[in-house]
Length: 124
Image (cartoon, rainbow, N blue to C red):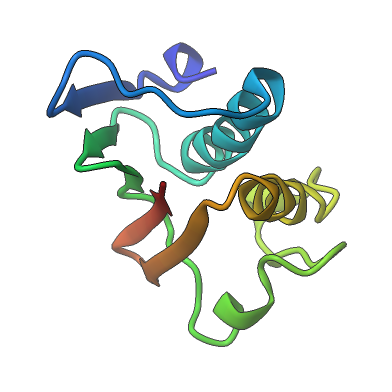
């Protein structure tokens, strides 16, 4: 998906292996939802940074950002940000990601600024 928009996905970590206990498929799904959104809401020829530092994973994009008015609702079921990029969204992805995080005792949070980008943080 990133290649189609010429988006570079950068990754850095502070150690080679980070072990956690949990459902691999669901944790993978949690990350893919957020990474997919980062790609969807980023412009062509941009970059997304994924980082693992001190048991915390961040997914940072330089996309359109999320308005302050929308932030409190993005994890609500069927809530969709009204934008061209999200015309095909169901409003379930971030709800599912949050439920997976909660079931694995992972704290998920988001910081965003319109026109600057969004950063999702997963604290294990």
